[in-house]
Length: 341
Image (cartoon, rainbow, N blue to C red):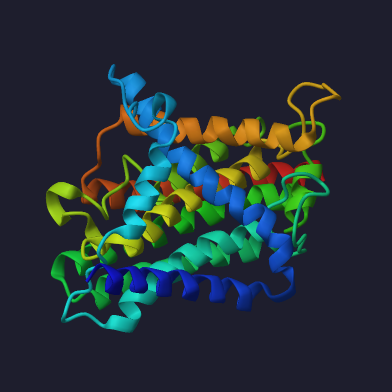
C-alpha cells in the first residue's frame, strides 16, 4: 500500500516537471537557478512565519527538529511526500490530480518575468506586467477545478468563495496599478523600476500602495481574508479532500503567490532593486530582497493582529469600499499626471 501511494506522489512530481519543461523549453536551464532557491525560500518562509507568530504570541514555536527548529520545514516536506495520497472514489481522477499541479506551476511561471536587478531577469518582456497579471488570474481555474473535481459540497463552496474573492479584488488591483503605468508609460517591469530613480512610487502614490497591499492580501487568501479555508465553516475549503503531496502543492502555491505578489509590490511602488541609501558596495539584488522581506514580514504581522472577516464583510469591502476608492484615486492621479504633462 505504501509503495502504491508513493508511486502516485512520484507521478505527480513527474507531471509537474514535464509541464515546466514543455512551457519553458530552452529557457528551463535559465529558470533552474531561480526555481530551486524559490522552493527553498518557501520552506523557510513557513518557518519564519511560525517563528514570528510564536514571538508575537509569547510562545516558542518550532524548536525540536534541528537547531532552533531550523530543519522543521524539511521534516514537514518529507512527511508530506511519504504520506498516503487519498483520492475520493467519486472524484474526477484526472482533474483532481491536475489542479494542484496547475496552480503550483502557474505560481512559478511568473518568476520568469520578475527582474531582481537590471541584469538578473530571465525574460525582460515589454508586456511583462500584463503577462504577470494574466498568469496570476489563471490560478482561479485551478481552484475551481479542485473544488468541482473533489465532488464534495464543502470543497465546491470553498472554490466558489475563493474564485469570487480573487475576481473581486483583481478589479481594484488593476485600477490601482494604472496610475503607475501612466507615470512610467510602459508595461515593462524593468522600465517601471528605472522611472523611480529620483523618487519611489510609494510616496506620490501612497494611498494606492496601501490599498494594493490590502488587495494582495485578499488575492493570496491571507488573513484577514482567508475565507476560502475558514476551518470553522468549510473545514479547509477547496482543498479539503487533498492530502500528502497534492495538499503540499496547494500549500506551496499559496506561499509562492505570496512572495510573487510581494515582489510585484516592491517593483511597482518601492523601487525594486534601487537602493534606499546610496551605499555602493551592497549589490542591487540585496536591496530587492530587503524590501521583499519587509513586505513578507508585514503579511505575517497582519495575520497575528487581525481576526478573520465574515464573507459578507469581505465582499462589501471589495465592491463598496475598495472599488470606489480605487476609481477615485485613478481619476485623481491621472488628472495630476495630465496637468503636469
